[in-house]
Length: 121
DNA sequence: ACATTGACGGAAA
DNA sequence: ATTTCCGCCAATG
Image 1: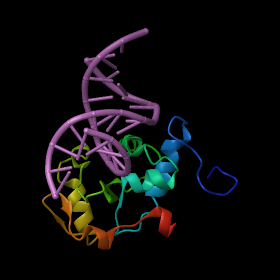
Image 2 (image 1 turned 90 degrees about the horizontal axis):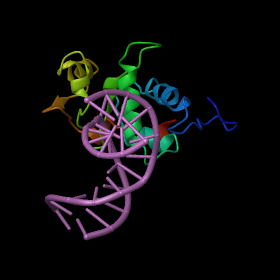
Image 3 (image 1 turned 120 degrees about the vertical axis):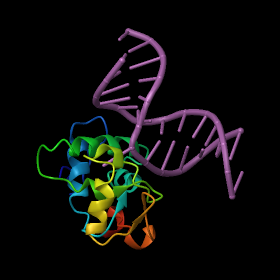
Image 4 (image 1 turned 30 degrees about the vertical axis):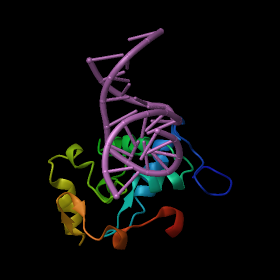
């Protein structure tokens, strides 16, 4: 946490952004998913959803506490980051293991599984 | 030092 | 409704 309000205040460009992204991602409940944009909005960097992707990419690097990167998809529910996992199917497998249906690299009934940090957190 | 490229997404055309 | 354009900025060639 960083801000006096308790809300993360780090923005892209600050070294804390990456850590905050990981922080939020770790709070995504199993069986739920969120989007890059949703995390960016929560962190007050609505236009930097790409940076969230960059941060998630680093999350897979293994270092630090594990981050459930498979629970972050794009706004359409597509597993756009699947190619960054050990194998192209790892992301989908992990989601299915949590009860999230995936068809054609896309979360089925995305809205029902969507978890918005701005609302839920 | 300069150009291109993204795990994106909203706005403009 | 669909397609194209840009902002955001770290990383890479």
